[in-house]
Length: 374
Image 1 (cartoon, rainbow, N blue to C red):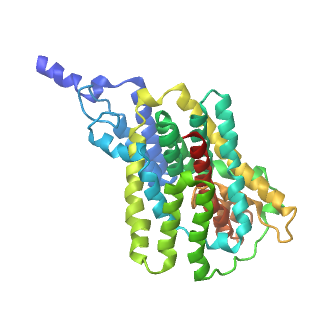
Image 2: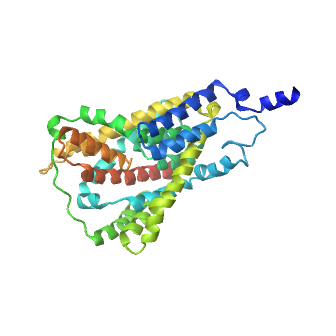
């Protein structure tokens, strides 16, 4: 009987708590949304299963979990908490990104910048709610809808809040098709949603090669603290566009980004242990995150409407919503909302301009925060 009781005390059934049970349910919901609803499954599935891994209740003597020094999960989590994984993911993003639309229509970079209003508005709000300035900066980056950047800045400025910030950022990235359309429709008229834009001009190979070099130099001089992110992003793009490093571009855009997406998703999910994650601060972060994302979306749309007051060739204000850096999901949302009004109105390529500008803008915003507060 003593042996049986010892065995029982070392099972998850014996050690389960209400908080743990809640997080297990959350993990299952994430997996359901990934498989059934196909909400960003490449992110939600590993995060959801990571939540299950991190919330299996183990006895105190067991060396498991991301917070147990020497455990396998703790070793994998090292790449998250040191900021190693995000730049490597940015390398892959660069290798997969086509900057042609942004190059052909440079004014759309303004829309990527306008969406950063959500970042700075949330930063101010978080300070008002009692968060320190470094923590508020990390929370504000959720508004950029850029998971890797949110994780990177959280590791530097608010490591204790890394779990909730990362989960909020990736959750809202996955829920782009749910959050953005109502805001886009609320802020635009049917006439505006029906605006057709001429096809983007063809961009030469020389322009595609020069762009990542020039863009890196300008953005890095503005925010040198973001060098790991900006450097990897534009290096990956140069791999793609140079035409002489196809093997490197293929590796960065496929194997490498897939490996580190899995690792960062599982580790972020596993960091959400119920006793650590379910706090008042975490709930505040989730509320601030959705506000940040909503303000960023609205800012992009409203700024596009403002630009139309001065442009002869009008732009469809829906593309302003793509200023958040959820590439390419927010651009797809713009395409779908536009097609719901006019099935023959294709906005995807136009939306990619502000979309990739949003990636650069969010990285620069992170660099500015780091240079001031780190």
